[in-house]
Image (cartoon, rainbow, N blue to C red; front, side, top):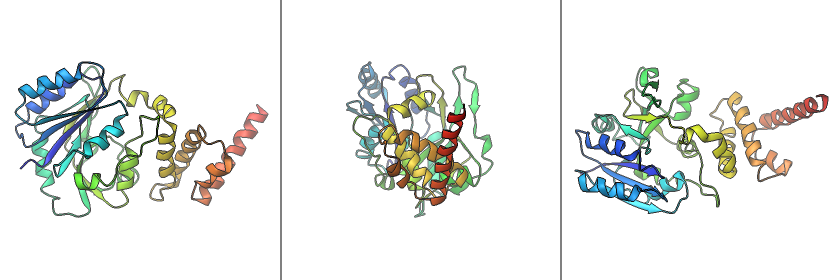
Length: 296
């Protein structure tokens, strides 16, 4: 019985998809299916996928939707995934040769847990020359924790591949704002953190390539073009009491900047900050900014 879906959202990435496909072909364990959600590509993605389907010795399903953004593609995928677990593998990433075997080996250790909803594997990042930017060496042993705990308790700041229980992920669809095509994925993982944990493993199962046409390289511009989603992400982080206050101060300033692009009412913006201490900080922050501007 197939228990794992490899899900790939893609948009005009026909030129790079074959590398991911080849990494799936190379897996010794073929107990998976591949779901591709094409987010309105205008290149030859459709033909490339059809070619994959003619060659693959595993199931490939392709869904086309009008261009709406990766988060909507994830929502679409979750409406169509029927396996117990899934992992998102971006179109510019690819799997290590033993990835599927590692996933099943580690899932067996948590299958009976009601609070551990999946695995987190550190992504091994490489640059355009193939040199490693980040590897799994920062994680010395397996840790059961939320991603917030990993960042602020264990001081592990890394990008992880998440292998999640589909039934749980379906309960957390991404919010959609008309006219916006992006929201950071941490919005959902942070919401899950309130109730669930992940087994963070030391093995990297995915290699990610940093590309100048990728989301990471353009994140500031993307957030500015999608201010409602950006504001929501920082709003939830600044009001999360599990995050240290020092970090929440930074999130509050980011929230204010993006919220201000759609909401000019000072009091309404201030009201969304739950902590009185954080409200006082923001007030003093703006007073100091006004004073500095006046004196300059």
